[in-house]
Structure formats: structure tokens, C-alpha cells
Length: 281
Image (cartoon, rainbow, N blue to C red; front, side, top):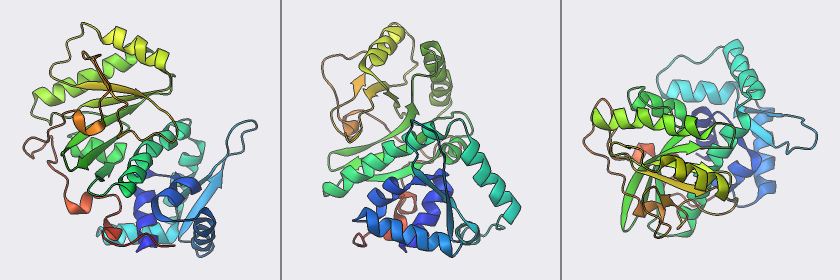
């Protein structure tokens, strides 16, 4: 089941690094590396490494011929041709947004790591941008969507990962689509901005001061490696009293409909095939 879970994760999230897959599915990095290389050798998955002097060059794993075929047939779809699969791999390798994608995926990996350490806590839904766009009527284009659950409750959210490459005006303008989704019957999920620095966070809050958010809750944090986004790191726009945990930010599902998938179903869990199965060594 672990190999099939790898296939599903790579199909949904385009690419994951060795460290990310280790964190999600293995106890030891060496064990992970050996298994990934075995799967690559039989054509189940593939990988690439972008050689950029002076920058991190992680191994990025992508769907291979057999994993792509498995996922398609499991969904009763036609498997991609070898050429289509190669084109998809090449586009991922050449994408100028690869670092952005990996960092967005890391956000959710950190949540799953947190959930592993705390009974009764879980990330029960993790959808890529592609799946999120389709699920919410193509109204919004976040970097991902999740539903975080704790004994005290749960919250759904949209992630907007910021690496400081866009203007603050552009960030604020993104909220218009979420406001229209909410007005037209979409869920009351907060928009979470994960920002690269405290200064960037301060400037965004200043930019949002006095803005009409139309009932859309907006919260910000500073992305910090190794710090769980579930913790008390969120600053709600309009409330500067204290930092909130993720579950303390209201995020109601509302009724399921064309613009909302409703609460998370068991099959939405990112590790659904392994739910209830101990982590393999």
C-alpha cells in the first residue's frame, strides 16, 4: 500500500523530494532512498535533479510509467501515453515555479508530521491547486487546500504561499476571487498567507488595513522550517492581540454544493490507503 500511496501523492502533487517522502512514509531516509530507487529501476516512478550551482538541488520524484498507469486505471481513466507522461515530467523539471511548488507541498508535509505526533489530530484533506480549482467551481486558484482536525474542532483553509516575488498589491487583489466565492455560496474558509519574513507580514497587514474583505477571514504567518503551521503562528487580519493556532481560525464548510465539497470524506485523506496502518520501517 505504501508504493500505491507514493503513486497517488506524486500524481496529486506533481513532485515531492526524497526528504518529503521520507517524512510522510518512512522512518529512515536511507530506507526511503533504497525503496525509491528500486521503484525507479522498475519504471514505477522517476526522478530528476536540477543542477543549480550555489542552490539546493534535491532529488524530485515524479510519476513513472507504472504509477501513472495504476492511478489512471484506479480512477477508471485512460492511462497517459509515454509521450504525454514524458512531456509532463519535462514541464515539471523546467517550471520556473518548481521551488514555489515544493515549498507549498512542504507546508502540508509539516502538518502531517505534526499530526503523527499528536493523537486525535490530523490533516484530513490535502488537495493540490489543480484539484482545488476543480472542486470550487474554478473560482479560486490557491496553492492548495486542506482541512485540519483536532479534538477541539476543525478548520478548512486555502493556502497562498508567498515567496516575496509578487507585489503586495497583487496579494491583496487575490482576495477578490475568494470574496466572490463566499458571496456566491462557497465555504467560509480562511485564506492563509505564508510569508517569507516578518517585515513582509507587517507590510501586508498595513496594506490590508481598512480593506473590505467581504466576510473572508485572512491570516498570516512567517514560514519557518521545522515549525508546524498548526501551532500558534497565525496573525488574523484585524486582530493583533495574539497569535492563533490553525484550529482557532474559524473555517466552516457550509453545505456541499457546486462551489463547495463540504466536510472531508475518508477518501480525501492524503494517506487514505494507509489510514490505520502503522508507519513501515
